[in-house]
Amino acid sequence: LEHTGGDRLALTYAAGDIFFFPSRTEVFPNNLIEAMASGLPVVTDDVGVNRAIVQDGVSGLLVKDTDPLPGDVSSYINAIVELMKDVKKRRRMGAAGRRSTHGLTWERTFASLRRSYDRCRPGRPYA
Image (cartoon, rainbow, N blue to C red; front, side):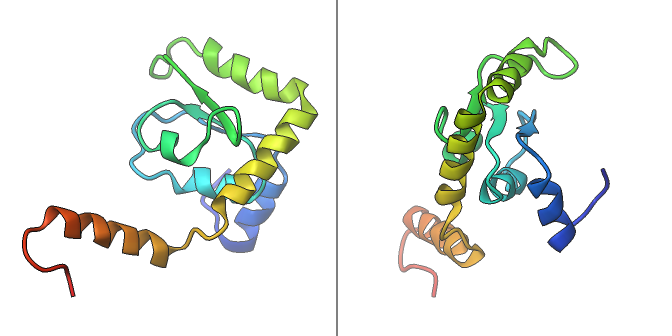
C-alpha cells in the first residue's frame, strides 16, 4: 500500500476484516481510530494510548508482552488467528469499535487537551 486519504482510505479500510497495528511507540495512533470507525476490530499492542482507544476484548485485542519487531511475533499471530476463526466475534468487535468512535472530533479532542492544560496551569484558564 501507499499513502492514501479520503475516499480511497475509506475503501481500503472497508476491504479489510481486521486491522493489525504492531506499534509500541506511536503517540496518537489515528489509524486505530480510523479503522475502528470503519468497523474493523483491531489487534495492537497493550501499551500507552492504545489502552485508551481499544477496549480489550470488546473493540479489539490488546496483545501483551510483545517483543519489538522483528522479535517473537507469536502473540500477534495468535490474536489475529483468533479473530480470523470467529466471524461473529470479529463483527461484534467491529461494531463496538465503530460505536466507540461516534462523537470523536478534533474540536472535542482539542477541548479536552485545553482542559488538561488548564488543570496544570496556576491562575486563570486559557481564554
